[in-house]
Image (cartoon, rainbow, N blue to C red; front, side, top):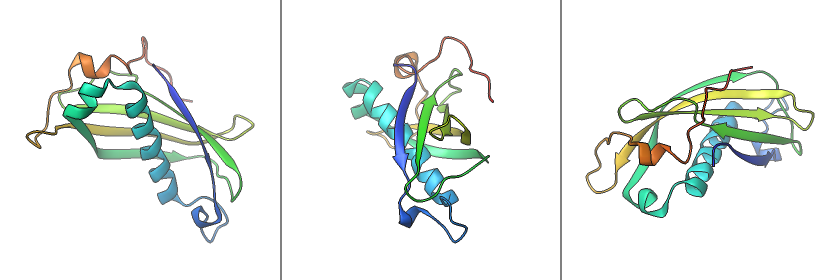
Length: 137
Protein backbone atom coordinates (compact mmCIF):
# COMPACT_ATOMS: atom_id res chain seq x y z
CA UNK A 1 0.00 0.00 0.00
CA UNK A 2 1.60 3.25 -1.12
CA UNK A 3 -1.13 5.89 -1.05
CA UNK A 4 -4.23 5.90 1.05
CA UNK A 5 -7.48 7.81 0.59
CA UNK A 6 -10.55 8.47 2.65
CA UNK A 7 -13.52 10.80 2.44
CA UNK A 8 -14.64 13.31 5.05
CA UNK A 9 -18.00 15.09 5.11
CA UNK A 10 -18.25 18.38 6.95
CA UNK A 11 -20.94 18.64 9.60
CA UNK A 12 -22.52 21.78 11.04
CA UNK A 13 -20.23 21.38 14.08
CA UNK A 14 -17.14 21.45 11.80
CA UNK A 15 -18.05 24.86 10.40
CA UNK A 16 -16.91 28.16 11.91
CA UNK A 17 -18.44 31.64 11.87
CA UNK A 18 -17.12 32.17 8.34
CA UNK A 19 -19.32 29.34 7.08
CA UNK A 20 -16.56 26.88 6.26
CA UNK A 21 -14.61 24.07 7.88
CA UNK A 22 -12.54 25.36 10.80
CA UNK A 23 -8.76 25.02 10.64
CA UNK A 24 -8.73 22.81 13.76
CA UNK A 25 -11.04 20.35 11.98
CA UNK A 26 -8.62 20.11 9.04
CA UNK A 27 -5.84 19.25 11.53
CA UNK A 28 -8.05 16.55 13.08
CA UNK A 29 -8.78 15.13 9.61
CA UNK A 30 -5.04 15.15 8.78
CA UNK A 31 -4.41 13.04 11.86
CA UNK A 32 -7.41 10.79 11.20
CA UNK A 33 -6.29 9.89 7.67
CA UNK A 34 -2.70 9.31 8.82
CA UNK A 35 -3.81 6.98 11.61
CA UNK A 36 -6.19 5.12 9.29
CA UNK A 37 -3.36 4.67 6.76
CA UNK A 38 -1.03 3.38 9.48
CA UNK A 39 -3.64 0.92 10.74
CA UNK A 40 -4.41 -0.30 7.20
CA UNK A 41 -0.82 -0.75 6.03
CA UNK A 42 1.45 -1.50 9.00
CA UNK A 43 1.86 -5.15 9.97
CA UNK A 44 0.17 -5.99 13.31
CA UNK A 45 3.46 -6.82 15.06
CA UNK A 46 4.87 -3.39 14.13
CA UNK A 47 1.67 -1.60 15.24
CA UNK A 48 1.89 -3.44 18.57
CA UNK A 49 5.53 -2.43 19.12
CA UNK A 50 5.45 1.30 18.29
CA UNK A 51 3.24 4.37 18.01
CA UNK A 52 3.58 7.82 16.45
CA UNK A 53 3.36 11.35 17.82
CA UNK A 54 3.07 14.49 15.71
CA UNK A 55 6.03 16.87 15.97
CA UNK A 56 5.06 19.38 13.28
CA UNK A 57 2.23 20.35 10.94
CA UNK A 58 2.87 22.54 7.90
CA UNK A 59 -0.49 23.34 6.30
CA UNK A 60 -1.51 25.38 3.26
CA UNK A 61 -5.18 26.32 3.15
CA UNK A 62 -6.13 26.97 -0.49
CA UNK A 63 -9.94 26.69 -0.53
CA UNK A 64 -12.67 25.45 1.76
CA UNK A 65 -15.95 23.59 2.05
CA UNK A 66 -19.11 24.09 4.08
CA UNK A 67 -21.48 21.87 6.01
CA UNK A 68 -22.65 18.87 4.02
CA UNK A 69 -19.80 19.08 1.51
CA UNK A 70 -17.17 16.37 1.17
CA UNK A 71 -13.39 16.37 0.92
CA UNK A 72 -11.29 13.49 -0.37
CA UNK A 73 -8.06 13.06 1.59
CA UNK A 74 -5.07 11.35 0.02
CA UNK A 75 -1.94 10.64 2.03
CA UNK A 76 1.48 9.24 1.21
CA UNK A 77 5.10 9.11 2.33
CA UNK A 78 7.54 10.39 -0.27
CA UNK A 79 10.88 10.56 1.52
CA UNK A 80 13.03 8.24 3.59
CA UNK A 81 12.83 8.70 7.36
CA UNK A 82 15.44 10.68 9.26
CA UNK A 83 16.27 9.03 12.57
CA UNK A 84 12.98 8.75 14.45
CA UNK A 85 11.21 11.20 12.12
CA UNK A 86 8.85 10.23 9.30
CA UNK A 87 7.15 12.84 7.10
CA UNK A 88 3.70 12.34 5.64
CA UNK A 89 1.97 14.31 2.88
CA UNK A 90 -1.79 14.87 2.93
CA UNK A 91 -3.85 16.50 0.21
CA UNK A 92 -7.58 17.27 0.34
CA UNK A 93 -9.61 17.90 -2.81
CA UNK A 94 -13.28 18.63 -3.36
CA UNK A 95 -15.61 16.62 -5.62
CA UNK A 96 -14.37 18.56 -8.67
CA UNK A 97 -10.73 17.77 -7.90
CA UNK A 98 -9.96 21.30 -6.68
CA UNK A 99 -7.19 21.47 -4.08
CA UNK A 100 -8.55 22.49 -0.69
CA UNK A 101 -5.77 21.84 1.81
CA UNK A 102 -2.24 20.48 1.52
CA UNK A 103 -0.10 19.43 4.47
CA UNK A 104 3.28 18.03 5.37
CA UNK A 105 3.24 16.48 8.82
CA UNK A 106 6.23 15.16 10.73
CA UNK A 107 5.77 12.21 13.05
CA UNK A 108 8.20 10.72 15.58
CA UNK A 109 8.28 6.98 16.26
CA UNK A 110 7.96 5.93 19.91
CA UNK A 111 8.77 2.47 21.27
CA UNK A 112 5.74 1.25 23.27
CA UNK A 113 7.85 -0.74 25.75
CA UNK A 114 10.27 2.05 26.67
CA UNK A 115 8.34 5.21 25.77
CA UNK A 116 11.48 6.48 24.02
CA UNK A 117 12.17 7.62 20.49
CA UNK A 118 13.05 4.81 18.12
CA UNK A 119 14.87 5.01 14.80
CA UNK A 120 12.50 4.33 11.90
CA UNK A 121 13.68 1.14 10.25
CA UNK A 122 12.99 0.05 6.69
CA UNK A 123 10.53 -2.64 7.80
CA UNK A 124 8.37 0.16 9.27
CA UNK A 125 8.50 2.34 6.14
CA UNK A 126 8.30 -0.34 3.43
CA UNK A 127 4.48 -0.51 3.31
CA UNK A 128 4.29 3.29 2.86
CA UNK A 129 7.26 4.47 0.78
CA UNK A 130 6.78 5.79 -2.75
CA UNK A 131 9.25 4.78 -5.43
CA UNK A 132 9.88 8.43 -6.35
CA UNK A 133 9.01 11.73 -4.64
CA UNK A 134 5.67 13.22 -5.67
CA UNK A 135 5.80 16.91 -6.65
CA UNK A 136 3.61 19.41 -4.78
CA UNK A 137 0.89 21.21 -6.69
